[in-house]
Length: 349
Figure 1 (spheres, rainbow, N blue to C red):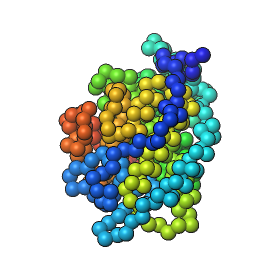
Figure 2 (figure 1 turned 90 degrees about the vertical axis):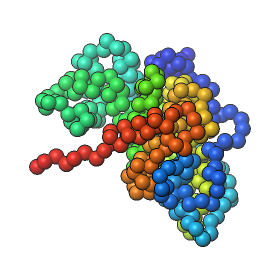
Figure 3 (figure 1 turned 180 degrees about the vertical axis):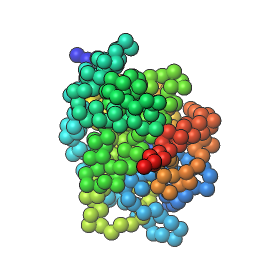
């Protein structure tokens, strides 16, 4: 029996890669494990440095500066891994009930705007999000949007795909970190940018942009659980600078839990494969979607770090990327992200 996502996207759910035997294979560490990864890079950073800086910001952990004593955190990491084995993906919320029929209809290229509007109209939250997005600067039309049908037609199938995915995933990501509003907002900032960048890179290769967007938006759904577990472990411990190896292992644990969540939601086979490959970044990917996700993950992290003044906003990732995409492609992707997520000018009173 095919899964829900398999029925709609032509793929069956594979054996969850997270259940395969073997230890975690974390991202390659930086050359100097004691380096201050959260310090601003002068002009360029490696993907590993970007990831460490992002996760330090996400976990609210201080960076190790020159002359600062660091802790390896090995004992804490063992406790963290033990706690993570109790993570139950069944505790994650299911996707909204209206999604199956809506996504099935969206898969049909001949679906009429009226039919889509009728489905969207069943969910008041979805109606509000569609109207909000079509009123933004990016979609703003010459004439005001007067009906839900007009808004749906203006969005188009690709735009509606994204609105539906965002509406389903944003509350999940923001709630995944428990009472850490800071971390929940950071995860959603990254998810939006990662999804957009992954779809942009995939479109240039002629791939499935919706699967790419979906892979990007769910790529860190399990990292919120790591945030919660760390807060438990650090509640009675003094805040200290933990070394790079600890941060790398925590990030790897987050990607593993994200993969488990994707399997639980029965996402398309190619999406699950890309998330599996993302566990081993930046060692390379076997699939085009996996390669696009690895690049998108890094450029999204870099932009979030730039917006929080941890890194320069114009940091260049192209020169340091190990392969798969050219420096020019990565630079164009970064430029596109900056343009798409530029702050909107305030509306005149």
